[in-house]
Every structure is written in C-alpha cells, then in structure tokens.
Length: 154
Image 1 (spheres, rainbow, N blue to C red):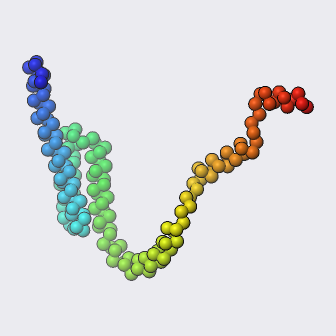
Image 2: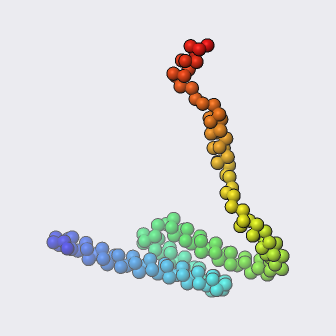
Image 3: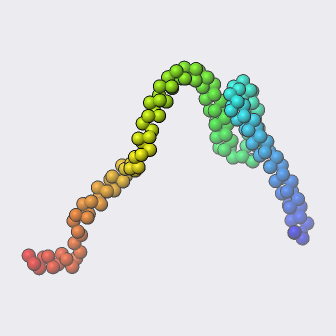
C-alpha cells in the first residue's frame, strides 16, 4: 500500500476505472450473447432489432477506449455477416432437403473407403523438397582435397 497521498489516490481512481471498464466490457459481451441467442433460435426479426442496440454498445465501448476501433469494427462486421447469413438461409434450406438426401447416401458410401486409407497426402512443397534432395544424394560433393587428388590423377 502506498504511503504518498497522490499514490493512494491513484490506487483508488484506478480501482474505480477498472470496475467501470469491466461493467462496459460485460455489457458488450451480454449484448453480443443476446444477439447470438436470437440468431441461434432462428428469429431474424428479433436479431434485426437487436443489431442496432448491440452495435451501439460496441461503438460506445470503442469511443471510451475500452475496445480498439478495429476490434469493434470486426465485432460489428461479424454480427452483420451472421444476420445476413440467417436471412439468406431460409430460402436455401427450403430447396435443399430434397437434393441433400441422395447426396447424403452417396457421401455415406465412400466414407469407409476414405477412412481405411491412411496415406498422407504429399503437398507440393514436400514434392519439391524431395526432388531437390534427390540429385544431391546421387552426386556427392567434391571437397577441395578430393578435387586436388582428382587433378593429380589426371
């Protein structure tokens, strides 16, 4: 515990600011959780109403310096992207169930064959590395001493 009056005051002020920052950070997390819960329930209308509120909470945290502006932008972008995906999903899910059933059966059949194969795939980098090392193994490098003895022999 500090002895100097100004240092004591800094401790008190820092504790107060820390608790305020925690409250704001918690409010941001709560708002995002509510929005994600609406998305998980598939309720696009509620999620659409919660989006401006959530964005507002995130913006206020960013303006106070609790969140970095890029972090806030990434959070808002992810929320908008997930809402747009939910809006687009009902149209796609209505048409897909009939098409997916034959695909599911077709995919289920080859799956056991793929599981039995344990060969690792060679990436392009590995293939190139193997090609580069192969010529070096065929041709041993000549050192200065070997070159000198080879020249004398000739």
